[in-house]
Every structure is written in structure tokens, then in C-alpha cells.
Length: 143
Image (cartoon, rainbow, N blue to C red; front, side, top):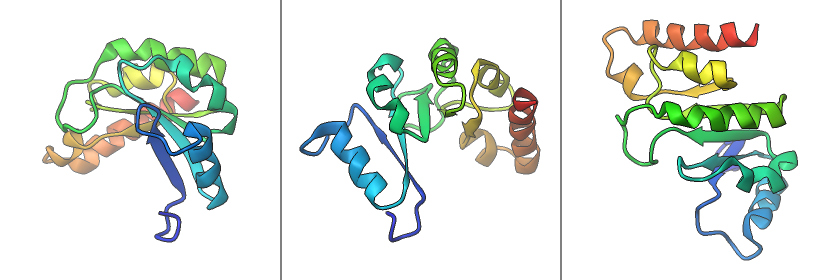
């Protein structure tokens, strides 16, 4: 990935890990010069990433089950975002899953400063308008 130009590698803690576990994977990612992120599925509590958080550049909170585009935003994941933001005020916190102009404010109010959207953008006749709305919510939360 690094050779292809990637600057950040995010992995799911729930994934099968190499020998040495998540720490070995973090070390190998950092050895390439890439930044490191950990993704959490909806059923995974935030606390499982705390042992690694001081080595991370980003935490991704999934508000849908990964792998299926078009799922609905799960607002019940926002307390997880709030808890991570409270514990790590300077961390990049990404939210992915069901984000649109209708749901993005919940994510940014909870502390997300990086937003992933697919269906809302690609399914719209006004892609620029959707992107502008998402960006405005992030900008508003950062000010």
C-alpha cells in the first residue's frame, strides 16, 4: 500500500491479525511511513482500541455493518464517538455509514471531524451540493 502511494492504513480490530496481533500490525504499518487508523464495527466497544490509541492517527467508527453500501445511519453509535472524542480531543475521528446531509450533523456534533459518504453523494443529482453540505457540517463543528 505504501509503495502505491497510500499515506494512511486503517484496519478493523476485529480482523484476523498477524502473529503479534494488532501491535505487530501497527508497527509494520508505521515502519512503511504510513499513518495508522483503527476501525470499529458497530458492536465493538470503544474500549478495545484504548491500549493502542496513543499510536493511532485516526479512529473510524462504523455506523453500519461494513461491506454493504446504502445502509441506514445508526445514531446509536454517536455515544461511542462522544466517548472517544472526550478521551482523545486531538484525534481524527472518522464516521462511516449512512452519512448524508440529513445525518452528518449528528456525527459532527458527537465529535467526528472526518466524514465518509458514498451513497448520499453518488446517488444524488447534486453531488457538489451534498459534498458542500457535509463539509459545512464539519467546518461548523470545528469552529
